[in-house]
Image (cartoon, rainbow, N blue to C red):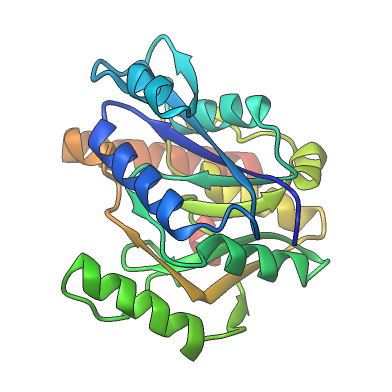
Length: 249
């Protein structure tokens, strides 16, 4: 496999999470087999994220304020050089061979537009019970999944946006994330729905297991406000498409 993959990581006052995510990418991604670039999109953080990125040689797109996940991803994709795009949450820890596994699934299925891994924390079918008790155990579980679930691709109606891989050609075909869903929730459902409307399938890769802390940015806020946001965006999705996204869970 060849072709550059742009890994786009939105972040907001989550420097420690970003550092952990980047460290796992560097440790568990073979730059020869799967060349990549990392693009951090900083949503107006006050924790020194742009300076850290500069010191690490990581491209950083800086926004003046917290504009949310969809806008940050769009800014990152506009700045990307890759033939492939990965949208990655800053609270994700990847595992050995993750990008190679996702790329293989996408490259071997011409009719597929987006692929995603399984994880310990997600809504819907991507959440799996691959037991682990520590980060070391997690990486053992991920390594076991590479062998045990080899080629375990499942068609799926939606992929959660914590880690999604797709080609630049898909992005050029269906466009950017819909920023009406800012600051986040259901923009990934919307993107998957649009991909399927254009005739592309979605695949869940059971042989790629990543760790997801889950809603790290949103957990800092008020739980009632978060629920209101989720319900608002669900309503926006239904108004746009006249279909309940729960049908695709």
